[in-house]
Length: 508
View 1: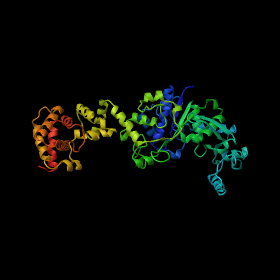
View 2: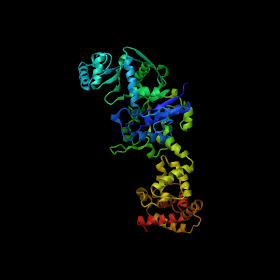
View 3: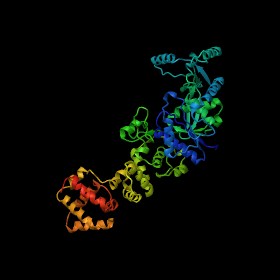
View 4: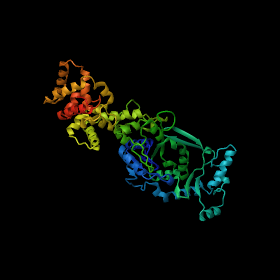
């Protein structure tokens, strides 16, 4: 096999959808497994759809995911530039070569002329297609004399170069995911390859030329590009590049969690999950959620995406990036669309979060505490993480579960108050407070015995008293073992909290 070189070639038209991240990931896994190169190319030939900040967003998204760029925008390389708008002088030569060789032609049709023909076709009950049935009768270099063509070009008439799709030819193609694909050329139209209006190529020409010049060996891209495959095959043939053309693989769509269709931002907004790797704020000021900001670990995010359309052939689900690289193969990519599950995404993150060493979790919690201006001893943060880690699903859950260890409650869960702050329970809490002031060894083991002995000696209801104490310490009914909580927050803080609740709830 020739040197493996793959490219991820997004257009900077907005935020990078997770479907695009999956495409980048599959390219990256394949390149790493084959000892090849992963290239980032920005395809910005559509100037009307260009969105400021989108290119930088794409690069930062790949960085967060840990997908390393070997060549391309932001890192450079032997085939620079990797931004198509900076390569515009390259493409006209190739478009003109196709015209010279009879594979393409100039078309001078105006939008108004084409609209009129389209309406005529629709009136006759036909579907308009710019193909072999009408091109000979339009203002093209197929009909006009060479002299008139040159005259029109010289006087500044706008023109495009269209590919001259052969008539009634079976185009035989092979796709690494879908197998053999055959298409009759008569069903295809003559696509525009180059436009004089902006002196830029269309996607089709720029894509093929750049893949050839950058020595791309495999094109791994989304299913939405499958209809373009016949034209791309024919372009390689027209240029005489069939022997060096890349192998193609078209990945299945990411489907919405419910119903039919492709996963969209609207689905995320409706069901409450992100569809972008990072938070995205376009020029209109609206903000879309990102997996990073929602509290997902990048390795969990990648693992989840990898299995949307591919599996290693067994039931294995949790895989490191190195394991994915070693197991990945194109022939195990599914043809059918992969349904996205927000619940499964959460599950993956939960597994990865729980598997992190305690010191890494402690660092995550410490970073979150700093966002609310809390600085705590490392030993305390580590002890708290040990108690809360089993219930965390997303990174922000660490702070939610741990906050009361560092900040005394000032409000109390109303339902818990109604259930336990009644009868003699407030008085029992006051007496427990006095008892605990006498304990010097404020450790969980000592506190557990002291509390149970005190309650049992007075034949009080254990659940009622302990939950009232928990309410005063936590502000709610959750949390770890109460003696462990008391040991971590310390005697002074614990006693202060037990006194505070009496004041806040105005009970003697």
